[in-house]
Image (cartoon, rainbow, N blue to C red; front, side):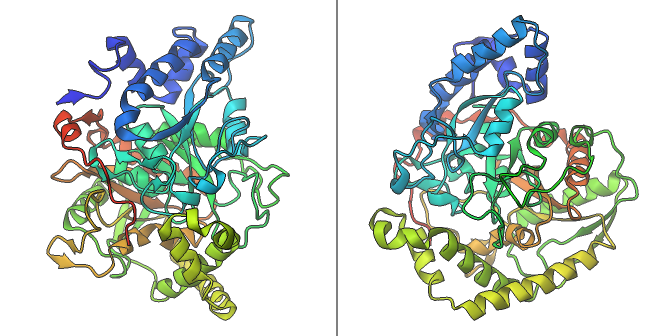
Length: 503
C-alpha cells in the first residue's frame, strides 16, 4: 500500500503538506508569502502528471497555468492586496467554457472547440485569484452517471481504480479526491455534483438555480430542470469560500438572482450550533429508491450524529407517488431541447447511450411534457409545505456505493433484487426538480472502503443553512475524511478496458 503523493511526487514532505491543505489555507499561505503561487501550482501539476495516467480525471491541461501563477506572485510583490483565492489552483469541468483552452463537452462533435470567453463561474474564480490548472473529464454533454466518452475514455475512482467516479462531474470529483487540485467546478442537473462527491468521498453543493449565474447558455430563461454550476472541494469551508465568490447576479444571465446578505464563509466554518433544528430523515423516499444495506446503515449512523448535535430528527417524507412521471416528462423535455439538433447530423459519433436517450425523448409528446410540469408544480408545493415543518431533509445521496467499471450494473443490493439499478440515483433528481439547495457530504465507508454520501436538503434559497448543517456534521465526523490511498495491488489488477455503455 503506497500513499498517493508520498514516494510518488518527488517533492517529499513539503509537497505532501501542500497537497493536504484546504483552499483557504493555501490562499493564506500565498497572501502571507509563506509559499509562492508558482511553487503551489508546480506541486499540483506534478501531482496531475503522476496520478492522472491512473485516474484519468484531467483531460486538458492549461499551458498558461504557471504563467498565471507567476502573475499572482507579481501582484503581491507589487503591494496589491491578496484576493480571496489568490494563487489557489482549481480545475473546471470540460462542459464549462474556458477562453483559449479546449472545451469539448466530452463530445467528438466539439473535440477541437476552443471558446473565446470563460463561463461566468470560471471568470469569477479567476477574478478572485484562483489559477486554472486544466479541464476535467465529463460524459458526453454531461449526461450520464458514469464519466466516460469517446475522446478521453473513462475516469476512475481514486478510492478503487476499478470503480466509477460517478457522473457527470466525475472528472472533478476524482481529481479533487486524489488531490490534483483543492477545489473544482462541477455542474448539476440530476445529481452531477452530488453523485461524484458521494462516490469519491468529497463535498459538493448544488446551489439554487440562479445563485451562480450561468453564461454562456442556450436558455437564458431556463424553463427546464436547471443545469446549475457549483463548487466541489475537500472541505465544507472551501465550499463556502467558493460560493462567496461565485454567487451574485449578472445581467448576462437574466435568471440570476440578487445576493441576500448571507455570509457563506461564516456559515461553512462549522462553529454554528444545530441545536433545535428540525430534520426529516427519509431513508428511501417512501420506498421509491432501492438502497444498499451498508449505505442505509451508514446514513442512519449519520442521522444519529445529527441528533447528538442537537437536531430533532423524525423519519418522515412527503408524497413522491408521481415522481417517476415527473422525471420522465421533464427529462424528455430537457433531452430534446438541449441535444436533439445534434442527433441527425452527428449521431454516428455520439455516445450510444446518449443517442438512445434523445431518440426516446423525441417520442414523448408535448402533452406528456406539460402534464409532467403540472405535476412538478404540485410536487413543489408538497415539498414547500413539508419544509414549513422541517429545516432540512436528509437522505442518502445515492442508494449504493460506486459500481464497478468492468461489470454490468448490479442486479442485487444486499439480498434484494433490483430491476433497474439506476433508480439508486433518484435521491438526487427528486430534489433537482424543486430547485432547492442540496449538498452531499461523506458519512462513512463500506466494508470495501468505498465512500458513502449524506444528502442535506435545505429550504428555498438557503444555501447558507445547508452549509451550516454540512459544516457542523463534518466537523463532528472527521473520521469520514481520509487521505486517499492508491492501492498498488489495485493498480496492477486495474481493468484496462472498462465497459463504456451501461444500460
